[in-house]
Length: 268
Image (tube, rainbow, N blue to C red; front, top):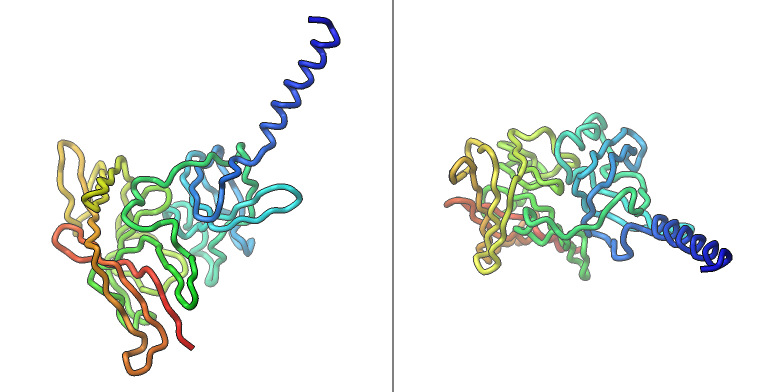
């Protein structure tokens, strides 16, 4: 190869490498898609009230997308992450629960599939609108079979799996909240499976939480969340004065019913 050709080839290789490194993490990153942090990200919440640190290797879900000057940016819902990450938000009375905009670059994120531990609910439907109906798929399960009509003033027993894979259990939680407080108990999911035909999401842990029907398998503990395929409706404030209709999907954990408030339809 002549010297001139070698120089041109080397230049193209260097240019190509630099081009790849400066591309967004994935062109397919959209709202509600999942990413894994490639480094520890230290940023602020959207109102720049508190500093938020998201460790390297954390699974996060995209809350929103924006484009500016040829670059793609994402923000993340910190409330959906585990307690140690969202804890700074609790110091504010009215916190911004989203991060500031972060570059969707490979040095920040790697795109991944939806985690199996979140398979029990339609995790990528949250926020979708259809006329007056808004989907509210947050993964929060409440003990019982329906949201009470006076939910803004009531509380109940709640559990959820965070975006980064922690089962959080709240013995008593208000139905209306901005940021989840410190849970009564929390466990890291070590393994998860979702046999589609069964409608079950099977979560595995190294220990168990008192009050939940864990099943011991060898030296591990399993908790199964099963979709029943049934639902209920909550009319707010009552059937004679309909302001909202809330729908709830029913799940079963052990022999106990839990529900997820999954949509709200508002009437003027």
